[in-house]
Length: 447
Ligand SMILES: Nc1nc2c(ncn2[C@@H]2O[C@H](COP(=O)(O)OP(=O)(O)O)[C@@H](O)[C@H]2O)c(=O)[nH]1
Ligand SMILES: [Mg+2]
Image (tube, rainbow, N blue to C red; front, side, top):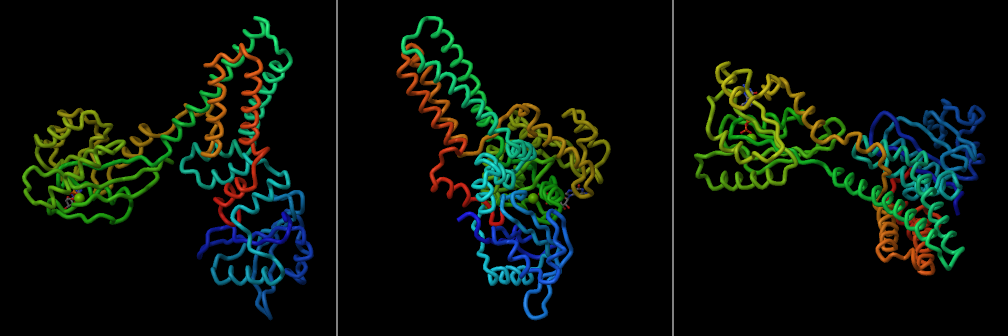
């Protein structure tokens, strides 16, 4: 049943400024009377109204409620959103009250599923809602907003129309003449190119969506752990003037300029040590460096130019990296200019991890190296399920080309029918219930 009364907390659980509880179903107008007793008449569709809920003898929960009348709501049913002060006790009381009044708790994604069943959105748009919530980059958010507005649905409909045309052309004449063949061949070629382009762009995009590993490297005591803490904005790593303090590497996630970064603090290089533990730490450091997408290489500016740094930098020649001179708050000018000349560093590469001086250069580096650029303007973003279905379509069209099926209209017609049924599945026109359930069960409760 897609219109019995359901309720769920739509915001994260816990204490906070606001909590929103959603209630949906066709019996809602009846429920409103019971829920808001004397102040129910104040509720106007689509208008946030200050009111209260009478929970049990004399206990009033103040709230701001918005009523959306069917069909002008997210789900297409009558829908109520109650904003409360976010206190877990209060939220529980309100939910309990709603259950007593005949609601049941919503399943994950059930509000969006109702929107789908009521024709408020198609499957691709519903999936965009979930992808939008889980997006890890601004580009992804942007793309999923486009899909939610219907871009993906529209583009796939165009693809479907093209396939339908081809199919009609094929089925109309079982005997092709040379002109037909040429036309078919060209149309198929253009289509295959377009599909492959969409597919490749998605693969490339996916490969850049995982968080990027940025490792802070340098000799012992150059200030790596200090910089790590400064970038995280809290004292995560132990800092000490004793060389070899960091043994195991530390890893923390943070977002820089909208890019997800895995920042890693490692044991520093020490050419003198024979401490087994420290040596193991250094072995692990090299492992981390190998896996890194980019490095920050820190040089201790308070020390005179050291060959050890130059030796390591030589080994790291091929790595993408930002070299920085640290401790410039205490370093002698002479040392600094020596380094600057040797490595041709700008003044902006002179930092102090301790005082937080010039650290902006790191976010600029991240933006330049990693941020997804305008290359993605024409990207039609697909999620995993969609990409899988899409890859099957690409495969069919490629096969048609490779096997030169435009000379064999009967076989071609069969393949086009297959491709069309894949497109329908992709668009959610023919999706088995278990697949639908699987899709929506990955949504948040209350979405
Ligand atoms: N004056 C000054 N001292 C720093 C700076 N960065 C780190 N240090 C000091 O250098 C020593 C080693 O720092 P640490 O972060 O543990 O270096 P690591 O071995 O590379 O991780 C500590 O005594 C820090 O307080 C800086 O920018 N200025
Ligand atoms: Mg350290």
